Amino acid sequence: MNIEIKISKKPVEYTKAIAFLEKRLLKLKNHKASELVWILEHPKIYTGGTNYKNYEILDKKIKIIQTNRGGKITWHGPGQTICYFVIDLNKRNKDIRKFILNLEKIIIKTLNEYKIKSFADRKNIGIWVNHKNKIKKIAALGIKVKNWIAYHGFSININNELKSYKKIIPCGIVDREVINLKNIKDQEYDLINKKIIKNFIKYLKV
Picture 1 (cartoon, rainbow, N blue to C red):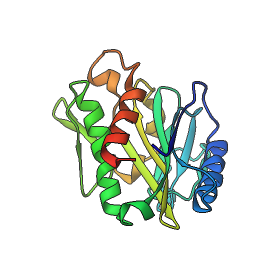
Picture 2 (cartoon, rainbow, N blue to C red):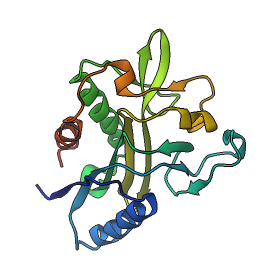
Picture 3 (cartoon, rainbow, N blue to C red):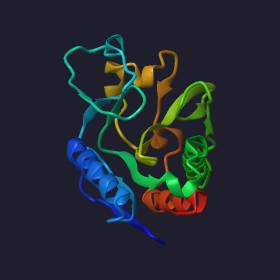
Picture 4 (cartoon, one colour):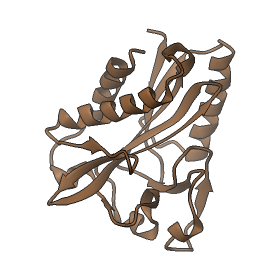
């Protein structure tokens, strides 16, 4: 299996992580490195994708780090699992749509192993749950494709605080809230990183 699996135990600064992904992409393009799946957490930070608007910042005091991934504004921080990747779509029929569908399946399957039912929404990107008769967001996706190499990744809210989302319109969606797994089902999620990697390998056949 020509892929590196990387799990960081300590939080990784956002800008350092993205710089690492950018360098890895160039190395992969030049056949000097393997593909990558990297599980980590970030210190608290707000990031804005290429499509966000200023009105989506509700608290003008917060700092938004501009990034080149797709999507809008989101928050990262402790208790949220990030899955970054550098995956060569040249080896996978250059099929971006299938790749995104597989990312959604990875998350849905992982949560299903914890007896949590989730689903994708074609109109609102991300993974959602129906919690107490309200549709809430449990996972966010943001990717960029360069030279048919996909990178950036997705995040799953495990036991992170949720009040920071009140300062933004998360992912530009005004009528739906964000939730974490602990609020849905209070159980242990210590093995979720291993389950994500297992399902990543299964669905992308990397």
